[in-house]
Length: 47
Image 1 (cartoon, rainbow, N blue to C red):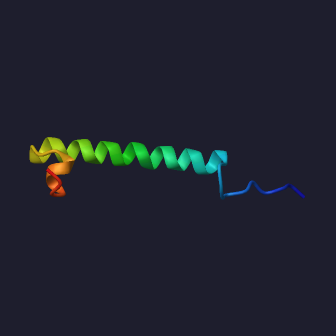
Image 2 (image 1 turned 180 degrees about the vertical axis):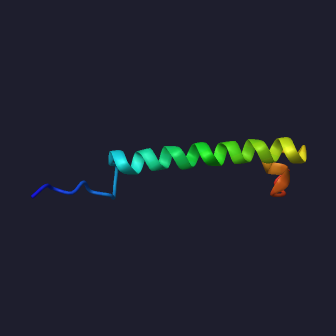
């Protein structure tokens, strides 16, 4: 029987998905800035 890889904590699986979601969020944020002409801080009312 093979041991299953742990899916929680600092594992390769978790870090891979964390990186993918971070890249996706960055691209969406950048696209939103380009489409609206406002920065992210302006959009959420901090500036």
